[in-house]
Image 1 (cartoon, rainbow over the protein chains, first blue to last red):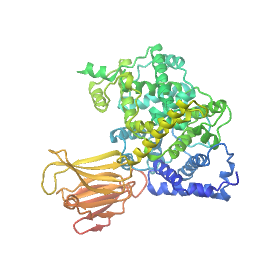
Image 2: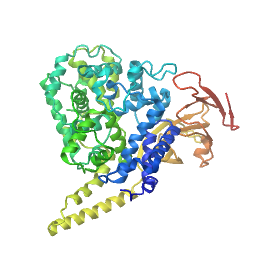
Image 3: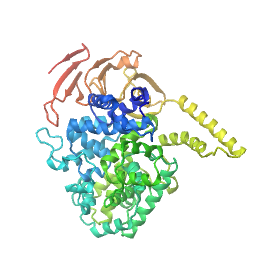
Image 4: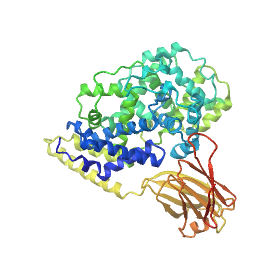
Length: 272
Length: 315
Protein backbone atom coordinates (compact mmCIF):
# COMPACT_ATOMS: atom_id res chain seq x y z
CA UNK A 1 0.00 0.00 0.00
CA UNK A 2 3.05 2.24 0.12
CA UNK A 3 2.38 3.25 -3.49
CA UNK A 4 -0.64 5.32 -2.47
CA UNK A 5 -0.02 9.05 -2.43
CA UNK A 6 -2.18 10.01 0.54
CA UNK A 7 -1.41 13.72 0.22
CA UNK A 8 -2.87 13.76 -3.29
CA UNK A 9 -6.10 12.18 -2.12
CA UNK A 10 -6.46 14.32 0.99
CA UNK A 11 -5.88 17.61 -0.78
CA UNK A 12 -8.21 16.76 -3.62
CA UNK A 13 -11.05 19.32 -3.61
CA UNK A 14 -13.99 16.98 -3.18
CA UNK A 15 -12.40 15.15 -0.26
CA UNK A 16 -11.50 18.41 1.46
CA UNK A 17 -15.05 19.67 0.98
CA UNK A 18 -16.40 16.55 2.67
CA UNK A 19 -14.14 17.11 5.66
CA UNK A 20 -14.91 20.82 5.94
CA UNK A 21 -18.62 20.23 5.62
CA UNK A 22 -18.62 17.73 8.44
CA UNK A 23 -16.40 19.90 10.67
CA UNK A 24 -18.82 22.80 10.18
CA UNK A 25 -21.74 20.52 10.91
CA UNK A 26 -20.13 19.24 14.06
CA UNK A 27 -18.71 22.43 15.60
CA UNK A 28 -20.92 25.47 15.76
CA UNK A 29 -18.19 28.09 15.74
CA UNK A 30 -16.76 28.51 12.20
CA UNK A 31 -13.30 29.16 13.63
CA UNK A 32 -13.46 25.96 15.67
CA UNK A 33 -14.62 24.03 12.60
CA UNK A 34 -11.64 25.36 10.71
CA UNK A 35 -9.30 24.39 13.54
CA UNK A 36 -10.84 20.94 13.60
CA UNK A 37 -10.24 20.49 9.85
CA UNK A 38 -6.64 21.62 10.28
CA UNK A 39 -6.20 19.25 13.21
CA UNK A 40 -7.44 16.34 11.11
CA UNK A 41 -5.12 17.22 8.23
CA UNK A 42 -2.12 17.56 10.55
CA UNK A 43 -2.85 14.27 12.26
CA UNK A 44 -3.30 12.46 8.98
CA UNK A 45 -0.01 13.81 7.65
CA UNK A 46 1.84 13.23 10.93
CA UNK A 47 4.96 11.05 10.74
CA UNK A 48 4.79 10.63 7.03
CA UNK A 49 1.11 9.67 6.97
CA UNK A 50 1.62 6.95 9.57
CA UNK A 51 -2.10 6.62 10.36
CA UNK A 52 -2.88 5.99 6.71
CA UNK A 53 -0.40 3.16 6.62
CA UNK A 54 -2.77 1.00 8.63
CA UNK A 55 -4.68 0.75 5.35
CA UNK A 56 -4.96 -2.84 4.13
CA UNK A 57 -6.44 -2.21 0.74
CA UNK A 58 -9.88 -3.63 1.57
CA UNK A 59 -11.80 -0.36 1.24
CA UNK A 60 -11.43 2.57 -1.11
CA UNK A 61 -8.69 4.95 0.11
CA UNK A 62 -11.08 7.94 0.17
CA UNK A 63 -13.66 6.13 2.32
CA UNK A 64 -10.91 4.87 4.61
CA UNK A 65 -9.66 8.44 5.00
CA UNK A 66 -13.16 9.62 5.93
CA UNK A 67 -13.31 6.91 8.56
CA UNK A 68 -9.97 8.01 10.02
CA UNK A 69 -11.09 11.63 9.90
CA UNK A 70 -14.33 10.91 11.74
CA UNK A 71 -12.27 9.45 14.56
CA UNK A 72 -9.90 12.42 14.49
CA UNK A 73 -12.75 14.91 14.69
CA UNK A 74 -13.79 13.16 17.89
CA UNK A 75 -10.20 13.32 19.14
CA UNK A 76 -10.12 17.05 18.43
CA UNK A 77 -13.34 17.50 20.37
CA UNK A 78 -11.91 15.63 23.34
CA UNK A 79 -8.70 17.61 23.35
CA UNK A 80 -10.64 20.86 23.14
CA UNK A 81 -13.54 20.14 25.45
CA UNK A 82 -12.45 17.17 27.54
CA UNK A 83 -13.75 13.65 27.57
CA UNK A 84 -17.22 14.40 28.75
CA UNK A 85 -19.87 12.02 27.49
CA UNK A 86 -23.56 12.62 27.17
CA UNK A 87 -25.83 10.85 29.65
CA UNK A 88 -27.53 7.76 28.35
CA UNK A 89 -31.04 9.20 28.41
CA UNK A 90 -29.87 11.99 26.15
CA UNK A 91 -27.90 9.78 23.82
CA UNK A 92 -31.02 7.70 23.30
CA UNK A 93 -32.80 10.66 21.78
CA UNK A 94 -30.41 10.66 18.82
CA UNK A 95 -27.57 12.55 17.27
CA UNK A 96 -29.34 15.92 17.17
CA UNK A 97 -29.71 15.90 20.92
CA UNK A 98 -26.07 14.94 21.37
CA UNK A 99 -24.99 17.73 19.05
CA UNK A 100 -27.07 20.26 20.97
CA UNK A 101 -25.75 18.92 24.28
CA UNK A 102 -22.19 19.26 23.05
CA UNK A 103 -22.75 22.82 21.83
CA UNK A 104 -24.43 23.92 25.05
CA UNK A 105 -22.71 21.98 27.79
CA UNK A 106 -19.18 21.50 26.47
CA UNK A 107 -18.61 24.27 23.96
CA UNK A 108 -20.83 26.50 26.12
CA UNK A 109 -22.51 28.46 23.41
CA UNK A 110 -25.55 30.52 24.28
CA UNK A 111 -29.02 29.24 23.61
CA UNK A 112 -29.57 31.94 21.02
CA UNK A 113 -26.47 31.14 19.04
CA UNK A 114 -27.27 27.42 19.08
CA UNK A 115 -30.81 28.07 17.88
CA UNK A 116 -29.48 30.39 15.19
CA UNK A 117 -27.00 27.80 13.97
CA UNK A 118 -29.75 25.20 13.70
CA UNK A 119 -31.90 27.42 11.54
CA UNK A 120 -32.79 24.51 9.28
CA UNK A 121 -34.87 23.09 12.15
CA UNK A 122 -37.97 24.42 13.82
CA UNK A 123 -36.67 26.91 16.43
CA UNK A 124 -39.49 25.95 18.81
CA UNK A 125 -38.38 22.33 18.81
CA UNK A 126 -34.73 23.24 19.30
CA UNK A 127 -35.65 25.52 22.20
CA UNK A 128 -37.70 22.75 23.79
CA UNK A 129 -34.80 20.34 23.58
CA UNK A 130 -32.40 22.93 24.98
CA UNK A 131 -34.80 23.68 27.82
CA UNK A 132 -35.03 20.00 28.63
CA UNK A 133 -31.27 19.51 28.59
CA UNK A 134 -30.71 22.50 30.85
CA UNK A 135 -33.47 21.47 33.20
CA UNK A 136 -31.98 18.02 33.65
CA UNK A 137 -28.34 19.12 33.68
CA UNK A 138 -28.16 22.32 35.71
CA UNK A 139 -24.39 22.60 35.26
CA UNK A 140 -24.79 22.71 31.50
CA UNK A 141 -23.46 25.94 30.02
CA UNK A 142 -22.71 27.59 33.37
CA UNK A 143 -19.27 29.19 33.29
CA UNK A 144 -18.59 28.69 36.97
CA UNK A 145 -19.64 25.03 37.11
CA UNK A 146 -17.29 22.32 35.86
CA UNK A 147 -18.50 19.27 33.99
CA UNK A 148 -19.39 16.79 36.78
CA UNK A 149 -17.18 13.73 37.26
CA UNK A 150 -20.05 11.43 36.37
CA UNK A 151 -19.93 12.63 32.78
CA UNK A 152 -16.19 12.31 32.35
CA UNK A 153 -15.11 9.01 30.82
CA UNK A 154 -11.65 7.73 31.62
CA UNK A 155 -11.18 5.48 28.77
CA UNK A 156 -11.03 5.88 25.03
CA UNK A 157 -14.20 4.60 25.27
CA UNK A 158 -15.85 2.03 23.52
CA UNK A 159 -17.26 0.48 26.62
CA UNK A 160 -20.88 -0.54 26.47
CA UNK A 161 -23.47 2.05 27.30
CA UNK A 162 -24.70 -0.02 30.20
CA UNK A 163 -21.58 0.90 32.14
CA UNK A 164 -22.97 4.34 32.82
CA UNK A 165 -24.21 5.00 36.29
CA UNK A 166 -27.27 6.66 34.89
CA UNK A 167 -28.06 3.81 32.60
CA UNK A 168 -29.00 0.91 34.72
CA UNK A 169 -30.71 -1.21 32.19
CA UNK A 170 -34.14 -1.36 33.76
CA UNK A 171 -34.23 2.41 34.11
CA UNK A 172 -33.36 3.39 30.57
CA UNK A 173 -36.90 3.73 29.36
CA UNK A 174 -38.01 5.47 32.52
CA UNK A 175 -35.21 7.98 31.96
CA UNK A 176 -36.54 8.61 28.51
CA UNK A 177 -40.06 9.00 29.84
CA UNK A 178 -38.78 11.51 32.37
CA UNK A 179 -37.06 13.41 29.57
CA UNK A 180 -40.25 13.51 27.61
CA UNK A 181 -42.17 14.60 30.71
CA UNK A 182 -39.79 17.51 31.01
CA UNK A 183 -40.33 18.34 27.35
CA UNK A 184 -44.03 18.40 28.03
CA UNK A 185 -43.52 20.45 31.15
CA UNK A 186 -45.48 17.96 33.23
CA UNK A 187 -43.54 15.77 35.65
CA UNK A 188 -46.55 13.55 36.29
CA UNK A 189 -47.22 12.74 32.66
CA UNK A 190 -46.14 9.12 32.87
CA UNK A 191 -46.58 8.17 36.48
CA UNK A 192 -49.31 5.69 35.65
CA UNK A 193 -47.41 3.75 33.01
CA UNK A 194 -46.73 0.35 34.49
CA UNK A 195 -43.26 -1.09 34.41
CA UNK A 196 -44.50 -4.60 33.57
CA UNK A 197 -46.25 -3.35 30.46
CA UNK A 198 -42.96 -1.91 29.30
CA UNK A 199 -41.18 -5.14 30.12
CA UNK A 200 -43.78 -7.20 28.27
CA UNK A 201 -43.39 -5.01 25.20
CA UNK A 202 -39.62 -5.24 25.44
CA UNK A 203 -39.73 -9.02 25.72
CA UNK A 204 -42.05 -9.31 22.73
CA UNK A 205 -39.85 -7.17 20.51
CA UNK A 206 -36.93 -8.75 18.70
CA UNK A 207 -35.20 -6.45 16.27
CA UNK A 208 -31.91 -7.40 14.65
CA UNK A 209 -29.00 -4.93 14.81
CA UNK A 210 -29.39 -3.77 11.24
CA UNK A 211 -33.09 -3.02 11.67
CA UNK A 212 -32.44 -1.12 14.90
CA UNK A 213 -29.72 0.93 13.20
CA UNK A 214 -32.02 1.74 10.30
CA UNK A 215 -34.73 2.91 12.69
CA UNK A 216 -32.26 5.08 14.61
CA UNK A 217 -30.79 6.57 11.46
CA UNK A 218 -34.18 7.37 10.01
CA UNK A 219 -36.25 8.41 13.02
CA UNK A 220 -33.63 9.82 15.37
CA UNK A 221 -30.90 11.10 13.11
CA UNK A 222 -32.99 12.30 10.21
CA UNK A 223 -31.40 10.34 7.37
CA UNK A 224 -33.43 9.45 4.32
CA UNK A 225 -33.63 5.94 2.95
CA UNK A 226 -31.13 6.51 0.16
CA UNK A 227 -28.52 7.81 2.59
CA UNK A 228 -29.15 4.88 4.92
CA UNK A 229 -28.77 2.47 2.01
CA UNK A 230 -25.45 4.00 1.03
CA UNK A 231 -24.17 4.03 4.63
CA UNK A 232 -25.01 0.37 5.12
CA UNK A 233 -23.97 -0.69 1.65
CA UNK A 234 -27.39 -2.18 0.81
CA UNK A 235 -29.68 -1.69 -2.21
CA UNK A 236 -31.68 1.55 -2.23
CA UNK A 237 -35.01 -0.19 -1.78
CA UNK A 238 -33.99 -2.18 1.30
CA UNK A 239 -34.17 0.39 4.14
CA UNK A 240 -37.75 1.40 3.30
CA UNK A 241 -38.98 -2.18 3.28
CA UNK A 242 -36.99 -3.21 6.34
CA UNK A 243 -38.13 -0.20 8.36
CA UNK A 244 -41.73 -0.96 7.41
CA UNK A 245 -41.31 -4.53 8.68
CA UNK A 246 -39.72 -3.26 11.90
CA UNK A 247 -42.60 -0.90 12.48
CA UNK A 248 -45.01 -3.79 12.12
CA UNK A 249 -43.00 -5.75 14.69
CA UNK A 250 -43.03 -2.81 17.10
CA UNK A 251 -46.75 -2.37 16.64
CA UNK A 252 -47.34 -6.04 17.36
CA UNK A 253 -45.08 -5.98 20.44
CA UNK A 254 -46.87 -2.95 21.85
CA UNK A 255 -50.25 -4.54 21.19
CA UNK A 256 -49.10 -7.76 22.87
CA UNK A 257 -48.19 -5.76 25.95
CA UNK A 258 -51.52 -3.98 25.92
CA UNK A 259 -50.05 -0.64 24.93
CA UNK A 260 -51.99 1.07 22.20
CA UNK A 261 -50.92 4.38 20.81
CA UNK A 262 -53.84 6.49 19.78
CA UNK A 263 -53.55 8.59 16.71
CA UNK A 264 -53.22 12.31 17.10
CA UNK A 265 -56.12 12.70 14.72
CA UNK A 266 -58.40 10.75 17.06
CA UNK A 267 -57.37 12.87 19.98
CA UNK A 268 -57.95 16.00 18.00
CA UNK A 269 -61.46 14.74 17.26
CA UNK A 270 -62.02 14.03 20.97
CA UNK A 271 -61.02 17.51 22.00
CA UNK A 272 -63.38 19.23 19.57
CA UNK B 1 -52.53 4.53 11.23
CA UNK B 2 -51.18 8.00 10.60
CA UNK B 3 -47.62 8.87 9.66
CA UNK B 4 -47.12 10.60 12.98
CA UNK B 5 -48.29 7.47 14.81
CA UNK B 6 -45.71 5.43 13.00
CA UNK B 7 -43.02 7.84 14.08
CA UNK B 8 -44.23 7.63 17.66
CA UNK B 9 -44.12 3.86 17.59
CA UNK B 10 -40.69 3.85 15.97
CA UNK B 11 -39.26 6.02 18.72
CA UNK B 12 -40.81 3.90 21.40
CA UNK B 13 -39.57 0.75 19.64
CA UNK B 14 -36.01 2.08 19.59
CA UNK B 15 -36.22 2.81 23.31
CA UNK B 16 -37.47 -0.70 23.96
CA UNK B 17 -35.02 -2.50 21.70
CA UNK B 18 -31.77 -0.70 22.56
CA UNK B 19 -30.94 -2.10 26.02
CA UNK B 20 -29.73 -5.65 26.60
CA UNK B 21 -27.93 -5.93 23.30
CA UNK B 22 -24.46 -7.41 23.18
CA UNK B 23 -21.74 -6.74 20.66
CA UNK B 24 -20.07 -9.76 19.12
CA UNK B 25 -16.60 -10.19 17.65
CA UNK B 26 -13.77 -7.69 17.83
CA UNK B 27 -14.49 -3.96 17.54
CA UNK B 28 -14.45 -2.75 13.92
CA UNK B 29 -11.34 -1.05 12.58
CA UNK B 30 -11.51 2.25 10.71
CA UNK B 31 -11.15 0.37 7.47
CA UNK B 32 -13.95 -2.03 8.33
CA UNK B 33 -16.29 0.90 8.92
CA UNK B 34 -15.37 2.08 5.43
CA UNK B 35 -15.94 -1.43 4.11
CA UNK B 36 -19.38 -1.53 5.67
CA UNK B 37 -20.33 1.48 3.58
CA UNK B 38 -18.87 -0.11 0.50
CA UNK B 39 -20.56 -3.45 1.09
CA UNK B 40 -17.28 -5.39 1.01
CA UNK B 41 -17.43 -7.16 4.39
CA UNK B 42 -18.25 -10.84 4.66
CA UNK B 43 -21.75 -11.49 5.98
CA UNK B 44 -20.44 -12.82 9.27
CA UNK B 45 -18.12 -9.88 9.90
CA UNK B 46 -20.77 -7.43 8.77
CA UNK B 47 -23.14 -8.72 11.46
CA UNK B 48 -20.41 -8.33 14.08
CA UNK B 49 -19.67 -4.77 12.98
CA UNK B 50 -23.38 -3.91 13.06
CA UNK B 51 -23.63 -5.33 16.58
CA UNK B 52 -20.91 -2.90 17.71
CA UNK B 53 -22.63 0.05 16.04
CA UNK B 54 -25.94 -0.90 17.64
CA UNK B 55 -24.45 -1.05 21.14
CA UNK B 56 -21.68 1.55 21.19
CA UNK B 57 -22.86 5.12 20.72
CA UNK B 58 -19.40 6.52 20.05
CA UNK B 59 -18.70 4.03 17.27
CA UNK B 60 -22.14 4.76 15.89
CA UNK B 61 -21.38 8.47 15.84
CA UNK B 62 -18.01 7.91 14.15
CA UNK B 63 -19.78 5.90 11.50
CA UNK B 64 -22.46 8.58 11.05
CA UNK B 65 -19.70 11.16 10.62
CA UNK B 66 -18.04 8.92 8.06
CA UNK B 67 -21.34 8.51 6.23
CA UNK B 68 -21.99 12.25 6.25
CA UNK B 69 -18.52 13.09 4.96
CA UNK B 70 -18.82 10.62 2.12
CA UNK B 71 -22.21 12.01 1.07
CA UNK B 72 -22.54 14.82 -1.41
CA UNK B 73 -24.34 17.90 -0.02
CA UNK B 74 -27.20 17.49 -2.48
CA UNK B 75 -28.06 14.01 -1.31
CA UNK B 76 -28.21 14.71 2.41
CA UNK B 77 -31.25 15.81 4.33
CA UNK B 78 -31.52 17.34 7.76
CA UNK B 79 -35.17 18.02 8.15
CA UNK B 80 -36.28 15.00 10.08
CA UNK B 81 -35.95 16.68 13.44
CA UNK B 82 -39.23 18.35 12.74
CA UNK B 83 -40.83 15.03 11.89
CA UNK B 84 -39.18 13.51 14.94
CA UNK B 85 -40.58 16.21 17.13
CA UNK B 86 -44.01 15.53 15.73
CA UNK B 87 -43.51 11.90 16.57
CA UNK B 88 -42.36 12.74 20.09
CA UNK B 89 -45.25 15.05 20.64
CA UNK B 90 -47.68 12.46 19.41
CA UNK B 91 -46.08 9.84 21.57
CA UNK B 92 -46.44 12.07 24.59
CA UNK B 93 -50.09 12.55 23.87
CA UNK B 94 -50.63 8.85 23.31
CA UNK B 95 -48.92 7.82 26.51
CA UNK B 96 -50.88 10.31 28.48
CA UNK B 97 -54.02 8.74 27.12
CA UNK B 98 -52.79 5.21 27.68
CA UNK B 99 -52.03 6.09 31.26
CA UNK B 100 -55.31 7.81 31.77
CA UNK B 101 -53.35 10.74 33.03
CA UNK B 102 -54.57 13.50 30.79
CA UNK B 103 -54.40 16.56 32.95
CA UNK B 104 -54.76 19.43 30.62
CA UNK B 105 -56.50 19.77 27.29
CA UNK B 106 -54.73 23.03 26.86
CA UNK B 107 -51.37 21.28 26.85
CA UNK B 108 -52.64 18.86 24.25
CA UNK B 109 -53.97 21.65 22.12
CA UNK B 110 -50.58 23.30 22.34
CA UNK B 111 -48.82 20.14 21.30
CA UNK B 112 -51.27 19.48 18.52
CA UNK B 113 -50.63 22.98 17.35
CA UNK B 114 -47.05 21.90 16.75
CA UNK B 115 -48.17 18.65 15.19
CA UNK B 116 -48.72 19.64 11.61
CA UNK B 117 -48.61 16.23 9.99
CA UNK B 118 -51.98 15.25 8.66
CA UNK B 119 -52.84 11.56 8.92
CA UNK B 120 -51.82 9.78 5.74
CA UNK B 121 -52.54 6.44 4.13
CA UNK B 122 -50.34 3.55 5.08
CA UNK B 123 -49.61 3.03 1.44
CA UNK B 124 -47.79 6.30 1.07
CA UNK B 125 -46.16 6.34 4.46
CA UNK B 126 -42.83 5.08 3.32
CA UNK B 127 -42.52 7.52 0.48
CA UNK B 128 -39.36 9.54 0.99
CA UNK B 129 -39.00 13.27 1.05
CA UNK B 130 -38.57 15.29 -2.11
CA UNK B 131 -34.84 15.35 -1.63
CA UNK B 132 -34.58 11.62 -1.25
CA UNK B 133 -36.93 11.09 -4.15
CA UNK B 134 -34.47 12.98 -6.28
CA UNK B 135 -31.60 10.93 -4.94
CA UNK B 136 -33.57 7.73 -5.42
CA UNK B 137 -34.45 8.63 -8.96
CA UNK B 138 -30.82 9.10 -9.76
CA UNK B 139 -29.90 5.92 -7.93
CA UNK B 140 -32.45 3.57 -9.46
CA UNK B 141 -30.93 3.18 -12.90
CA UNK B 142 -27.54 2.67 -11.30
CA UNK B 143 -29.02 -0.30 -9.48
CA UNK B 144 -30.38 -1.77 -12.68
CA UNK B 145 -26.94 -1.54 -14.18
CA UNK B 146 -25.45 -3.42 -11.27
CA UNK B 147 -27.95 -6.22 -11.52
CA UNK B 148 -27.42 -6.74 -15.25
CA UNK B 149 -25.13 -9.77 -15.48
CA UNK B 150 -22.31 -9.71 -18.05
CA UNK B 151 -23.62 -12.78 -19.86
CA UNK B 152 -27.20 -11.61 -20.02
CA UNK B 153 -29.27 -12.23 -23.15
CA UNK B 154 -29.53 -9.55 -25.82
CA UNK B 155 -32.85 -8.23 -24.50
CA UNK B 156 -31.34 -7.72 -21.06
CA UNK B 157 -28.32 -6.03 -22.58
CA UNK B 158 -30.61 -3.71 -24.45
CA UNK B 159 -32.45 -2.95 -21.22
CA UNK B 160 -29.16 -2.37 -19.51
CA UNK B 161 -28.09 0.00 -22.30
CA UNK B 162 -31.40 1.84 -21.97
CA UNK B 163 -30.94 2.06 -18.22
CA UNK B 164 -27.47 3.52 -18.71
CA UNK B 165 -28.83 6.02 -21.20
CA UNK B 166 -31.57 6.91 -18.75
CA UNK B 167 -28.99 7.32 -15.99
CA UNK B 168 -26.99 9.66 -18.20
CA UNK B 169 -30.14 11.63 -19.00
CA UNK B 170 -30.97 11.92 -15.33
CA UNK B 171 -27.45 12.97 -14.49
CA UNK B 172 -27.44 15.69 -17.12
CA UNK B 173 -30.96 16.76 -16.08
CA UNK B 174 -29.78 16.97 -12.49
CA UNK B 175 -26.89 19.18 -13.54
CA UNK B 176 -29.23 21.50 -15.42
CA UNK B 177 -31.91 21.52 -12.72
CA UNK B 178 -32.65 24.86 -11.09
CA UNK B 179 -31.23 25.33 -7.58
CA UNK B 180 -33.23 23.70 -4.81
CA UNK B 181 -34.60 25.76 -1.94
CA UNK B 182 -33.34 24.52 1.43
CA UNK B 183 -34.98 26.97 3.80
CA UNK B 184 -36.45 30.44 3.86
CA UNK B 185 -36.74 33.24 6.37
CA UNK B 186 -39.32 35.92 5.78
CA UNK B 187 -40.48 39.11 7.42
CA UNK B 188 -43.46 41.31 6.69
CA UNK B 189 -42.22 44.44 4.99
CA UNK B 190 -43.96 47.13 2.94
CA UNK B 191 -42.26 48.06 -0.32
CA UNK B 192 -39.91 50.93 0.63
CA UNK B 193 -40.96 53.02 -2.36
CA UNK B 194 -44.54 52.08 -3.25
CA UNK B 195 -45.39 51.29 0.42
CA UNK B 196 -47.52 48.33 -0.68
CA UNK B 197 -47.62 45.57 1.92
CA UNK B 198 -45.59 42.47 1.28
CA UNK B 199 -42.82 40.22 2.51
CA UNK B 200 -39.07 40.08 2.23
CA UNK B 201 -37.57 36.60 2.22
CA UNK B 202 -34.04 35.23 2.33
CA UNK B 203 -34.17 31.91 0.50
CA UNK B 204 -31.25 29.56 1.15
CA UNK B 205 -30.44 27.49 -1.94
CA UNK B 206 -28.46 24.28 -2.25
CA UNK B 207 -25.84 26.21 -4.19
CA UNK B 208 -24.77 27.87 -0.92
CA UNK B 209 -26.27 31.20 -2.00
CA UNK B 210 -29.10 33.04 -0.24
CA UNK B 211 -31.45 34.84 -2.58
CA UNK B 212 -33.26 37.92 -1.27
CA UNK B 213 -36.77 38.13 -2.70
CA UNK B 214 -39.59 40.61 -2.26
CA UNK B 215 -43.24 39.87 -2.83
CA UNK B 216 -46.23 42.14 -2.71
CA UNK B 217 -49.25 40.81 -0.79
CA UNK B 218 -51.64 41.20 -3.68
CA UNK B 219 -49.61 39.76 -6.53
CA UNK B 220 -47.92 36.46 -7.11
CA UNK B 221 -44.92 38.16 -8.71
CA UNK B 222 -41.64 37.66 -6.92
CA UNK B 223 -39.01 40.33 -7.14
CA UNK B 224 -35.46 38.94 -7.20
CA UNK B 225 -33.49 41.52 -5.26
CA UNK B 226 -29.99 40.34 -4.52
CA UNK B 227 -27.86 37.34 -3.60
CA UNK B 228 -25.59 36.67 -0.64
CA UNK B 229 -22.91 34.01 -0.75
CA UNK B 230 -23.93 32.63 2.64
CA UNK B 231 -27.10 31.41 4.28
CA UNK B 232 -29.01 34.19 6.02
CA UNK B 233 -29.79 33.36 9.65
CA UNK B 234 -31.66 36.52 10.68
CA UNK B 235 -33.34 39.48 9.00
CA UNK B 236 -33.97 42.58 11.10
CA UNK B 237 -35.47 45.84 9.90
CA UNK B 238 -34.96 49.17 11.66
CA UNK B 239 -37.87 50.90 13.35
CA UNK B 240 -38.36 53.40 10.52
CA UNK B 241 -38.06 50.58 7.97
CA UNK B 242 -35.16 52.26 6.26
CA UNK B 243 -32.45 49.74 7.03
CA UNK B 244 -32.08 46.00 6.84
CA UNK B 245 -29.59 43.95 8.88
CA UNK B 246 -28.80 40.45 7.65
CA UNK B 247 -26.95 38.03 9.86
CA UNK B 248 -24.99 35.17 8.34
CA UNK B 249 -22.65 32.74 10.06
CA UNK B 250 -19.62 34.88 9.36
CA UNK B 251 -20.81 38.50 9.30
CA UNK B 252 -23.56 41.05 9.67
CA UNK B 253 -24.59 42.96 6.54
CA UNK B 254 -26.48 46.25 6.69
CA UNK B 255 -28.20 47.73 3.67
CA UNK B 256 -30.60 50.54 2.97
CA UNK B 257 -33.92 49.03 1.94
CA UNK B 258 -34.58 51.48 -0.86
CA UNK B 259 -31.19 50.52 -2.31
CA UNK B 260 -32.03 46.84 -2.05
CA UNK B 261 -35.31 47.35 -3.91
CA UNK B 262 -33.69 49.90 -6.22
CA UNK B 263 -31.07 47.52 -7.59
CA UNK B 264 -28.20 49.06 -5.66
CA UNK B 265 -26.29 46.25 -3.98
CA UNK B 266 -24.12 48.45 -1.81
CA UNK B 267 -24.08 47.20 1.76
CA UNK B 268 -21.86 47.43 4.81
CA UNK B 269 -20.31 44.31 6.26
CA UNK B 270 -19.58 44.07 9.98
CA UNK B 271 -17.20 41.40 11.29
CA UNK B 272 -19.43 39.68 13.85
CA UNK B 273 -20.03 35.97 13.59
CA UNK B 274 -23.31 34.37 14.51
CA UNK B 275 -21.71 32.10 17.08
CA UNK B 276 -21.32 34.97 19.52
CA UNK B 277 -23.29 37.95 18.19
CA UNK B 278 -26.99 38.77 18.37
CA UNK B 279 -28.72 41.72 16.71
CA UNK B 280 -31.49 44.17 17.48
CA UNK B 281 -32.44 47.62 16.29
CA UNK B 282 -32.82 50.49 18.71
CA UNK B 283 -34.61 53.01 16.50
CA UNK B 284 -32.10 53.43 13.68
CA UNK B 285 -29.10 52.14 15.57
CA UNK B 286 -28.11 48.52 15.19
CA UNK B 287 -27.09 47.00 18.53
CA UNK B 288 -24.77 44.03 18.21
CA UNK B 289 -24.41 42.13 21.48
CA UNK B 290 -21.26 40.09 21.51
CA UNK B 291 -20.75 37.31 23.99
CA UNK B 292 -17.47 37.79 25.79
CA UNK B 293 -17.35 34.94 28.24
CA UNK B 294 -18.37 31.37 27.65
CA UNK B 295 -21.72 30.39 29.07
CA UNK B 296 -24.96 32.17 29.63
CA UNK B 297 -23.62 35.23 31.37
CA UNK B 298 -25.10 38.64 30.71
CA UNK B 299 -21.83 40.38 30.25
CA UNK B 300 -22.21 40.86 26.52
CA UNK B 301 -20.39 43.73 24.95
CA UNK B 302 -22.74 45.96 23.01
CA UNK B 303 -21.49 47.54 19.82
CA UNK B 304 -23.57 50.29 18.23
CA UNK B 305 -23.62 50.67 14.47
CA UNK B 306 -24.96 53.85 12.91
CA UNK B 307 -25.84 53.00 9.32
CA UNK B 308 -26.32 56.62 8.26
CA UNK B 309 -22.69 57.45 8.95
CA UNK B 310 -21.22 53.95 8.83
CA UNK B 311 -19.79 54.45 12.31
CA UNK B 312 -19.25 51.44 14.57
CA UNK B 313 -19.07 52.51 18.21
CA UNK B 314 -17.25 50.15 20.53
CA UNK B 315 -18.61 49.46 24.04
